[in-house]
Image 1 (tube, rainbow, N blue to C red):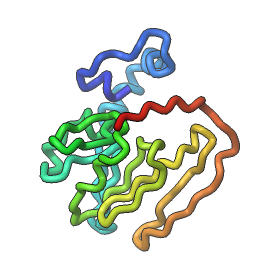
Image 2 (image 1 turned 90 degrees about the vertical axis):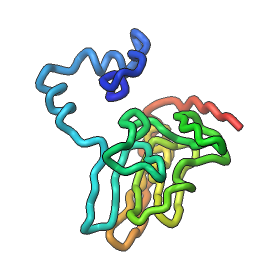
Image 3 (image 1 turned 60 degrees about the vertical axis):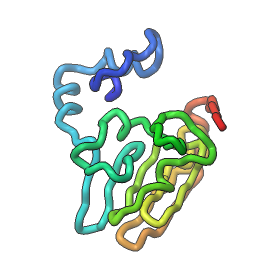
Image 4 (image 1 turned 120 degrees about the vertical axis):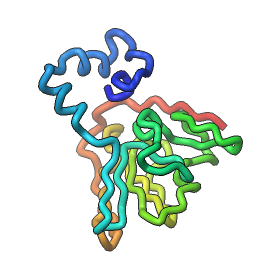
Length: 156
């Protein structure tokens, strides 16, 4: 839904995302527009974002579309929403704050020095994973069921 707001191609007609977006009221849209793209908790030394950050770019200069969609950064610096097995964006994040993120069920739990990917595929019948801060303790429970069929798209 957010991708649509920031100038991306609109969702495919009839898709679940399109149906949700068209059902939103003006009040819903106003509320969504008021939300931040990421949350910065200095007291926890943590950043919270849906998908990721590009290392070396100031937080205020990050591209909102990438914050919501990125999964990989290729060796040539290309940032993409596609899953490229050996090129997770989080491997490049150099802190100092720890980023907690999702949007990457293909990789499952990711743990780097300054980034923790918590998407363990709950919606696909995997697990729901949380990180207890400030100690960075991970807690995980099995999904009760598969809520959405998984369609894996891998690139090498």
